[in-house]
Image 1: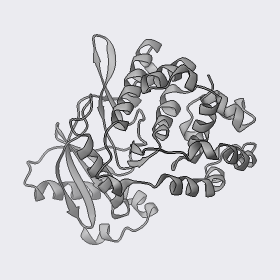
Image 2: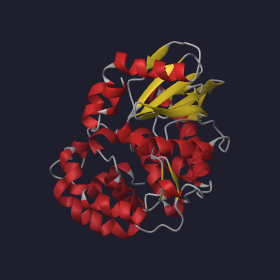
Image 3: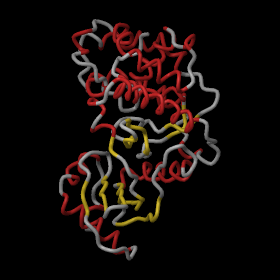
Length: 317
């Protein structure tokens, strides 16, 4: 096992071995044995960047390949900062370490159902409740101090410069509709000054998506009850964290958009065309931007002829 895992050096190799569940399970069992924990059923979660097993009923084992060591450090730092600081729980790290050159954490397993599994089945009233709760939750995280987290500072201007430089190639690789590709340089240039200003960096998770939000039902209404996955956390511009909810949950619904932004702290006057342009630019510059996957508006590619029209479809009020 040591030889196998220590030789993996690329993302492609890692993705290949992620499919070999029996090999990964042997590593999880070795971690359990190392910490003299009782044997328990292991179940591999199929989704996610890293390796995550449910272990028994109350724990999760998360394993990071060597190429994702920074994600291990990010998650560790941010979990410690968020612990018992929010209105909903985040996982607590019980054990951590390194095995075969890979790092890992054993965490408590939060109760709840992934929002991804039921969002589309919810009525509008429950969706409004959830986006309000999410806006408030993001504001809670953004209000926390960042001292001691300098290691995860992305140095916002440098980060944005890099994203701008590779923007066209990123979207060409991800098959953005060909009619939109030639418009990217001019659109980004026009919005550049909107995405640069940053007075105070905040803790960004980049992961406020239905895949990382846990919910539970009380008196017939679903409420957020947990927040997971902080491997991509960094310090930067607060608005960057609003992208996930708008893409994956709000899906062009203007009522939900206004409710979400109001709960986060935006006034009606701030919800304007300048805001729309800034947010569309940030969406194009996100480090994992892939609009064909992330914009969950049916047939949006056929509904727009320009990036400005796409801006209005996703962000316009």
